Length: 238
Ligand SMILES: [Mg+2]
Image (tube, helix red, strand yellow):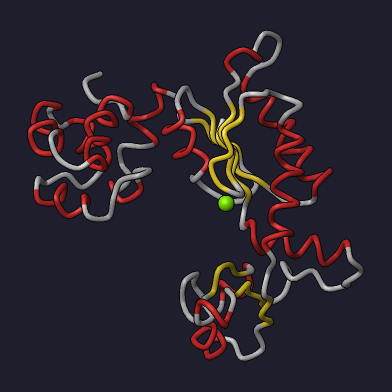
């Protein structure tokens, strides 16, 4: 199971503010979380849905964002707050398994293998999603599968507040049509190399002869090695 907090920095900051007596929920207004202006020249780190409707994108400067929406509210965010909510999520997840990999501040992998005696993976995912929402006040996407790569890909499908499955028998339908750019961990520099081999979708990659990939990528950089492994994980040679 892969759990990914939706719009973590903005949502966590929003609920922290509400808890501390502020009346405005910054998820409901044009708002952004900006990086430390003294260190990072003021980059947009997260945005509310309304800010998104103004065309504001993550990674652009706050200056650009203000041009698109002069009334935008800019908040600094606070890593201690993110840490606090990340820990709350982690503690809640410990009710379900002790095999948790904290992949980033707002993402966890859960190995549920030994905890499925009486429940399905979907039952547990539904309960986690509901509890996080009710007890912690934010939403998550959950991806379910039999390995980490597929679970991670699944949680990235439609957002927010959704559970998606991507089991082996669903790979062709749900994953093969996607661009290889969407493949988890695929390095940016590898994309043009694959394009040159006429590999544009994940399906193209899965259908490519493994020996061809080993020849091209196997001996080289560590990053590229992954491709050979993934070829199997994404349904190559089924
Ligand atoms: Mg996230």
